[in-house]
Length: 253
Ligand code: 1GP
Image: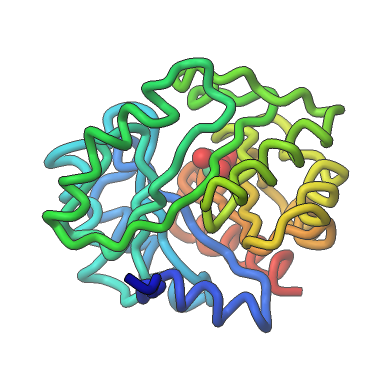
């Protein structure tokens, strides 16, 4: 059977031909459906490219479904699940980063949870986007939960080796993750080396709070920037809008 990319993956590929992309991550454990709906609507108005939904703890079941449905009702941006495990699947989403935490020390996060979730993804008809997920120091909650051996910040070559291995294993995107709320984002030198080595789109997230940090990541070679905490924890919807505009400007130039 010939491989055909799904709608969301095709949309991503077409867009990155001409611009850097900005994905906003909403964690259903941190936002109500109403807040998620408002942020998604604002994101679309401001020029964000997709909404990711997920988290390491509590982003499951009714809580997850409620947030995904609210986002779908308030915006037409593609929704991409970003699951902490097979519990993070919602039938209401368009697509899912079908990810393997390649530098986990626990096979559950490399292939186990994926096997437990695969039939659910198929049954619901959610578009899977195979992705290599790499945790960089400090790794924060996801590093701890995911039993990761975080890649040292001053060892870009390790990140590049894992990223290339992910591509050779057939993964069609690579995500460098410093961890949600990380004090510092992934170092630009690491982004640059990974970008030089791989051919698939490079996603970078974790700890990106300012236009300068976002700009440094895209200049180093990131194709897609993910921001979550800076928007979710802005304090008010007005401040969240300002932050979204600032970050989007840093990414889109
Ligand atoms: C976390 O990379 C994402 O998985 C986003 O991180 O919440 O720090 O923006 P922040």
